[in-house]
Length: 243
Picture (cartoon, rainbow, N blue to C red):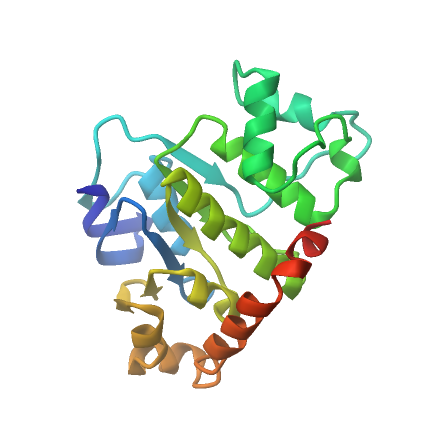
């Protein structure tokens, strides 16, 4: 059964159409990645899915009672503001210390509840955002460029954590990413967006599609093998990259 179904979606701002005829479904247990150039409508699609933008046409349906966790592209916290990780996690609502601890462990950053948010590395900060999105045990995780600002090893480690979370919690993932070399191997399905759905399918199918190559060139296909190598051999560095 589909958790989220998008049919013939159109999104417009001030009379300018940014998305048209977008249709796809997200099924239980899937990791689906949306790629596309700047201005292709990726974030507009997310805003429509979470209800922050009213569609100009088409429809979005969600499974009854669907719980969505959201990891934003960026979140600025005043570095002079004293706030522990535990306090930040509790801003999500009435949650216990044990719930916070469990979510942080799943996100790959256990035992940091008493650390100051301002003292966290980029990788740790993003994992805390992931933990906060996981705290209410969502059915679907939405990640909007969640590794922006991280270096390549940090990004690879973060996406490996997402794969682990999806496997261990049976949570589906819908994410936007510009890091083609990292994200393709982590995905069950890739949707290439440029105002409309240019192509979609398995990473290998999309990487060889003419529409995809027209947008991103031919060099990105070989990166699949590169990431596969990193993914298979760099598990020992994954924790270090998140520090």
